[in-house]
Amino acid sequence: MLARKRMRKIRNQTATGCNHDQCCHLVVISHIYSSQGAAALQVSCFSEAERIYMLAKDTTVNNKTLTSLVIPEIVQNDLGDVCPLLVFVNPKSGGLKGRELLYNFRKLLNPHQVFDISNGGPLAGLHTFREVPRFRVLVCGGDGTTGWVLGVLEAVRHKLVCREPPIGIVPLGTGNDLARVLRWGAGYSGEDPHHILVSVDEADEVLMDRWTILLDAQDISEDGEDNGFLEPPKIVQMNNYFGLGIDAELSLDFHQAREDEPDKFTSRFHNKGVYVKVGLQKMSSSRSLHKELQLQVDAQNVPLPNIEGLIFLNIPRSHTHMQCGGVGVIFRD
Image (cartoon, rainbow, N blue to C red):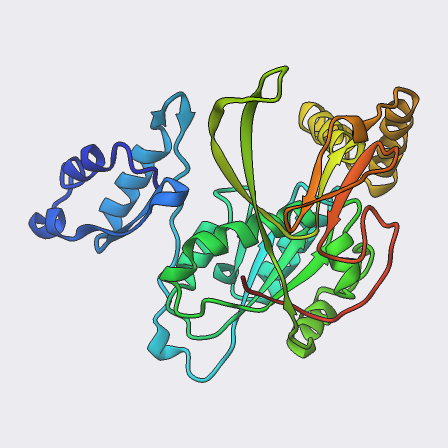
């Protein structure tokens, strides 16, 4: 998978150094994923594929190194009447448990079914399975990893034959609220990977809503007049919940702390301790959010009590405070 920039230059250089005169005609851009800034090249010559890979992996665009992957091509006619499993593993989740699952699933399954999501994201796996008529997805990671897969699936589903693959979860995150609601458990604790595969195969399928949130930034003067938009509207997808105030601030601070020192966030116990510590710090500096917010539902103003946060729930659980149950999921607008 390569970023769109440099595609023309890379393609013009592919025939250099190859003994096959026809190779310059055997390198084509088979798919372009504009929303992901990526493209897939179909190369019929192994030596040319190797050359393109080496050229692309050392290329930078806007000071960012391109992600270059060699991915398999599934011959759909040879599959038969089966429902294969596509596995995404975040090795950074759950301490070393993510790495262990990545290794174990690659032993139990065809390695080409199991993708390290930290290397190129979910697109490579979804592209590989694009022509498979039906398949299931297993996401090994936290709620953030699951949301990442869902977001990319939403963006590229029009290119997939199976546009709504059922998705199961191995919870490797800290809160794992979505996994709890769908009865995948509070957290992975070393279960036999073979038993996980059986659970995915036997899981029921249920529908779940996903919400689109439109964020408009407006410049409001002291007299209440709108001075125009500060920036274009932004659209985001909500799977679990959407928070304003102390909840959102706590999540952001935790995320930034983990990004700054990832080596310290290797266990759920430590992660939850950081949540508690940051939460206590936020509570000591409370703010009256109801004075800064105006809530409208169906064009009607809703009076707010003295609050420090406001959460819109899509699932009956927020940061392990509420409980409910389910068994599996198909995601659809």
